[in-house]
Length: 254
Image (tube, rainbow, N blue to C red):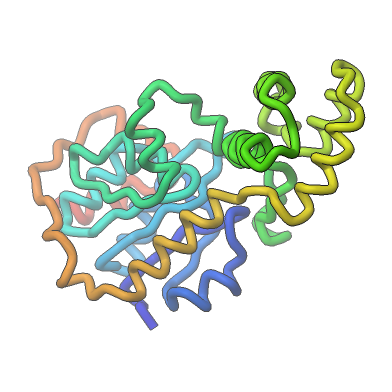
């Protein structure tokens, strides 16, 4: 077991399946101060960010990731908020993995909500209660590529999907909206049937591939972590105080 690895995981992949790829310490979706808390409690050599909270409480801060990197902790990200933060902090040494990470690196102004899904409370397993826009878009592109739908319909469905708030976004809600706004009833019926086996779940694929990669490589065989001087700013200290981790942070900055 990699008891020196901490993985923040939620709706993208079940913990049971994740453990079949990488045996590590699994924690619920990451939020503000959770990276500091993980360093304080587990002293990990690596932290993997896959899922995180957005609306329920403050999201994981960039500064706490940089703080962990400055302490020599390898930070990896994929699939969801992990891909976002890795794309944003790649110049500072965070390591991203997968198609979604590369997409955010290529399109830095892309919407965070493209990978966001509503999820059940931690007590109920943080399971997904909807579908991410990026998975909907990739599924629709695949459907067009194999001849299930026409390009015009794909564009119209993508536009409808984007118009839905992420907390309401799902294939079911998309098709309900489409039936009220579109006339391609027959194509949509065929698409629904095709999606049962043909839909894309790129978030899951990226998460699995990162866990497999980490399971197949020793930390010492990977690129050396980037060490740099970390400046404790007032805003970061205020964030950690708000999230109840200022004392733990300060004790490790001495």
